[in-house]
Image (cartoon, rainbow, N blue to C red):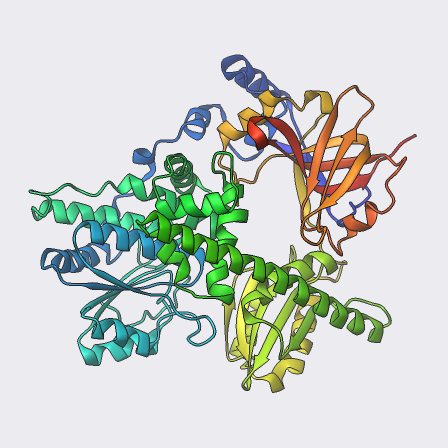
Length: 601
């Protein structure tokens, strides 16, 4: 088994530890074997071994087959019951209502199932709730609205698992509801006709990491089988389910679920489908996003995803799903332009709120003898609800503390929290809920959301700081970067980067390999972006070769301070290697994560 050693006893500029993977005699032989058999560069192999990909696993990892990893659909509790109910509506040509979430996973899930059903000549009505007027999840008015359009069956995607009261209300109006969700259910389930959720305690284990788009795809495999069994496709072509994998990949990447075996192959195959540019909406959004290279997890997560989310954050929540299922190129282009404009507005509002929140946090520090609290809670009646989560994430990066931002309006506070490594914010929020400090709430270790009575904000602040302090008895927990290898600039070759692309996709749980480039100087530093928030520069380690480096979203960060005084100083750089294909040329780039001042003797 591979181990790691602390690369440098000094913390980095971002107050992180760098752990370098070290090899023993056995793993060294594995490195040699993979080089001899596949010509896999030795700078990459240590990371694969660290992630548990042994020699016997390498072929499967390198070239995974979807058919070998897909589960039997009916192992999921209620899935067979659900597909039989949907099949009866499809065969009878009755319309089906779809209720989705306003994020990317919800939009892709709704688009997948709608496109499939409509290819079966089954009309669908989609409702995506307004974040501000309706909030998250199904509500009685919207469900009844779908019924009034003619739907006797409604499918909720990426929501519904905690919607007890709205689903209970449907029992009185003769509407069946099928819930397709992946969020953690309570022990008691809501009163739905069928609930398909890989996190149910009574369903087959091993698929808990699927997002809603992944669960929806497996549901459609079961539905397609049922319709085939009943002879529905006797005189018509079956929809090609593989064509929907681009949407599955988009939802999976943007929901930041672990890229384990099944999720990884869904994304890998989905990226291949996306290359064909057959989805009119994704094609239009890619063009407006100026994505000139082959789609990657980075372009999905940082270009397409934020634009789709922008509709739900500050605009029309149904723009995203409408774009993803659009078949008219002109309409798709119009929707893509609208989402791009909303995303620009979202960025402006984010920068504006960031500046305001930094001012409030600095005031808190000043009142606290210039000390940062264990946890930061800031509220305002002018905080835009749609971007508080984004800004909370930026603030936790800037101050290295858990941060909760609360937007107060009409007597209710809506909070978004982001945490740091080692502080399980979701569990703390659930405890606050049990103590009735907050009205509703939930989340996971690194992120949470909640609602609160504004009169309880001070109480919540004290509670949160008290809880977080117990995790900081030995100081603020430091995040550890895992570095694959120390690599000189002369070894940062096109061959290595192309191998990294072939071994992908990379994502949560299987992050892109990080490399350390030691003892190098910065030159040709420049800023770019609408607010000069990004930076581009070259580094040189004394050899004849230099390497271009990029870092995004620098403003107000500790790294930003380094770049104000970098001349004649040697640094160690940590980041990932990638290829820039701008203008039909291939240039190796280093995407910076962190810096350590080099030990130069």
